Image (spheres, rainbow, N blue to C red):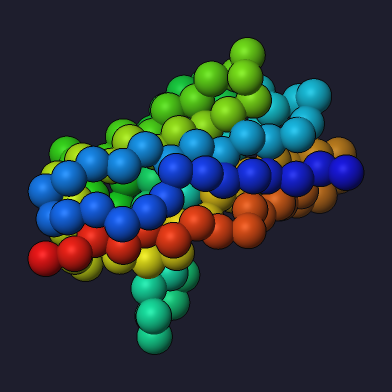
Length: 120
């Protein structure tokens, strides 16, 4: 059964750092686009960072220069290094995997989420 398992969330003071990890149980990890989303209380889920199969990355404006997404295809794992954390980064963070398959069918998977809380 395909699944994504996140780890690394927790409580940190403003200005601190956390590293999220997401392990994906698939034999074709390298062809997936991987992303981190977050959802704060009362807000819509938003994409935070994305990394393509070729390694290209993109970030939401609010985290540029502070967060870094990376992937290790040998370990089937995607990471989100979060530095200079702010209270507004507090949210549940979700790992997402997506690829387009045969006949343009979209294959998408989600992790269970990990809580990140930044205290002021």
